[in-house]
Amino acid sequence: RDPPPFRFVAPADGRYELGVGGHLSDSLYGPEHVYRIRIAPERPDFRLVVMPADLHRPDTCSLGAGGNAYLMVYVWRKDGFQGDVLLSVEGLPAGVTCKPQVAAHRQKQTLLVLSAAASAPPWTGAIKVKGAAEIGGKTIVREARSFGITWPVQPQQNIPTIARMERNLMLAVRGKPPLSLTGGADRVTVTQGDKLTIPLKLTRLWPDFKAQFQVVADPQ
Image (cartoon, rainbow, N blue to C red; front, side, top):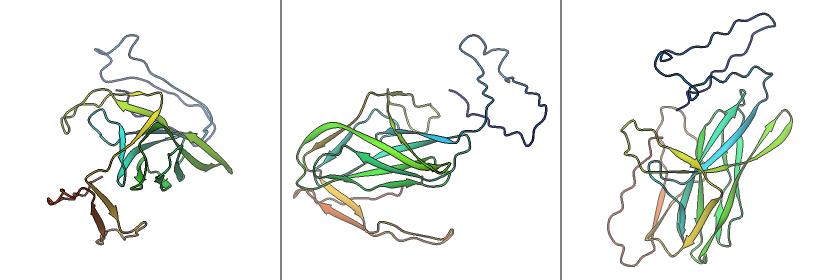
């Protein structure tokens, strides 16, 4: 795995010395172990990566009519870019919507929630996730690259998850899921240390689905 990039900004014009090394260089060396150094003026920018919801197994974005599904969007901020990125989805079929989302100041990942009407017909096709940001007084638009996990790993085992780039981001709309869970507030504000109440609405779409349904908050 590549280490996170190290970024250094010279405080003033002058002469600087750059030393490059590694504490494992006595055992890890050769053509596959290289250092990459770029010395250039800063050009703030960003790139986007979009993946299906599952964080540990190969997954696809399958959306049931009347239900919801989400995509993970990762923001790679380049050369000190810390601005907001407005995310949107293009190419959605009839009956499917996605509210725009903002990856706020310094935020590195967020979710995009896709919602299908109960009357949404079956559909399969490619969609696109795009992000827009103001950089240097101009609106910059970047299309997200689609990635997918190649094989499953056990969670909480300190095993890196390996992913690869995919040709397209595919969406499938199918029949009704057993339930639909929606939040009762589009936007909430809370002060650090205070409690926050978010009303939830559970709609049972299958007549025979009568069991209890447990909701657990994602710590991230």
